[in-house]
Length: 475
Image (cartoon, rainbow, N blue to C red; front, side, top):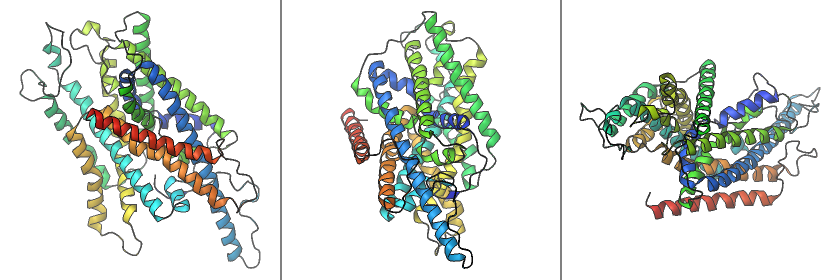
């Protein structure tokens, strides 16, 4: 997410690119989607997620078009510099055999913001990225300790042994029958332990995570596959316990935030698109990705809301043994039960250091001046702490992961997914309209100004609706 320009490393085919984009988008948000579907009702959720997936794809094409324009501008500057530097043999063109809009250089969002935005725009962009990353870390810092807490606290197995009329445990319930420690206290202990174990990475740099990310990806698809298959088997055996409503408008604001968060890929798009060898029909590739992801989310959510009577905000926790009767659990295989329950612990823990370091670097970039570099103490101590302390405070205050996902997606997520791409492509088109005679081969299918205005109005209306709903509901 840094605002630099990078060389392309290993190239890969379009099919590999499709897999990479798929893996990037499908992540933490998917674990909170079944609960959001249950709250909004299945028909309303179906309509909402289709609309939001389209809106996300629309703005992905905006970012891609802006990347093409940024490449053309940078190549033009390179050519001009080469001509100025070469007195005897001037270079007519730096890339004579390719369209200038071909995406051959990795231009991150931050660098494109520097090319197309003024100082105020760059500041707003950085603040939006920072707020989103704070939300990301808060979600991770709550989801991992909550998963560990729900596995460690065993009192629920005895809590309603003779009476299953009230199986919902609260944060004030005991963690163990032989202890006075409450579930909330245990959760906060886990939060503190989580930051002690992983927070230290923020003070350094994490490199060579390739194999760690491969293991994380494999475990993610194993976990998601298990959840869908187990839910389908339960439904096939006519043992589904869920009776979701058709529609509940009060659940839409949270579903909006969850869906925006779950379709987020815009901030990392340049790193994934640039290495693709053949970028012809790139938008067909991205459209296929979005259709596959939409089907996947619907499979996960619809099977979940009909399989379980009550859903946890972290879906994997529904696969733990039934608190009243273990024979009613969706599976009696202990490995599957605890593998799924611990799945967020493995995957989110590996991503936490990377996100926290990214946040630290973005915080540094906001006020950095070349003529006044930061002191060692500010650079190595203050900024890492500034990245860690707010998420720690939020995680200690609340363990409602679905709420955190909804808020992060509804505001900072909507800014990154809707407003920034729309303004970025508007400024890019305006800046280059008279500079090039060649056609932009990566121009968005949504060319007219109408789509830019529509996206901005959509973002404002959605954020206003979410805000009003939270005020009315008192949340």
